[in-house]
Image (cartoon, rainbow, N blue to C red; front, side, top):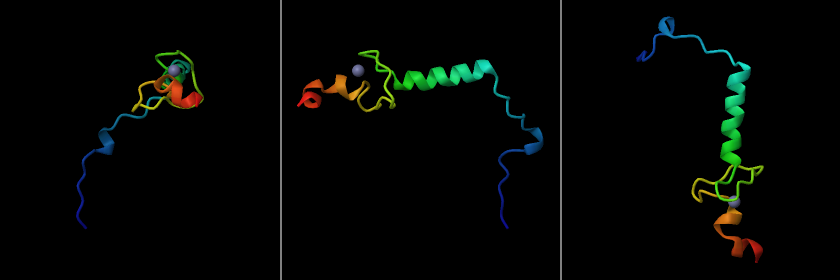
Amino acid sequence: MRAAYLYRLDLAAPVRPMTPGRWRAVHAMLRARRTCPLCQVTHPYVIPTSLGCCPGCADPVALAA
Ligand SMILES: [Zn+2]
């Protein structure tokens, strides 16, 4: 069997445990991904990076039609 050991487990640091501050940061990041930079509305879905804003801001005419 051929193997390539890229990481030495005996030298690896343990995973840092989640603290209330880390959870706050995680949820802030998730909220930022769901907040439109144009209308500042926090949507239940992640803002598409291809648009850079919510679909409503990207094309309000097509959305209203
Ligand atoms: Zn928007």
